[in-house]
Image (tube, rainbow, N blue to C red; front, side, top):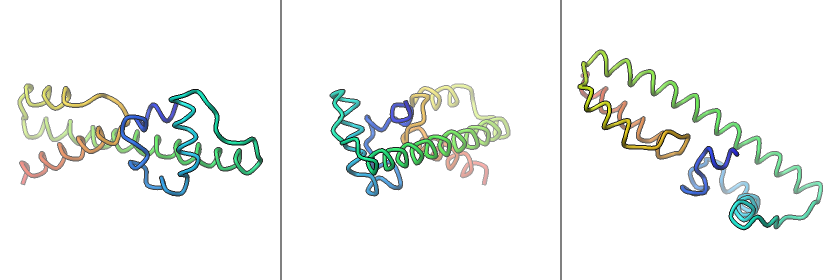
Length: 120
């Protein structure tokens, strides 16, 4: 599921830009995942807003996947260019889970910043 791919249950909804727009639905999704209980009604508006939430989550997943791809390519390029030792590369790769979490994205940004600083 998208919620699992984005590691939202571990990191929280606050890692998403629009989390306050969907607070009621975020809570309902969390409740469903944790307790397997559906807490919303079956009103047309609820279904419409859940579909909107699904769309925003899919957009976030696509954004993170693309961003990690770009960051990863640039990190690999700089590692080669700067002749970063294999042990440093492996340590970085072992420092996080390979997923679409906010933590993974931040570690990628931090490594990219570190490499760009070395390059200067």
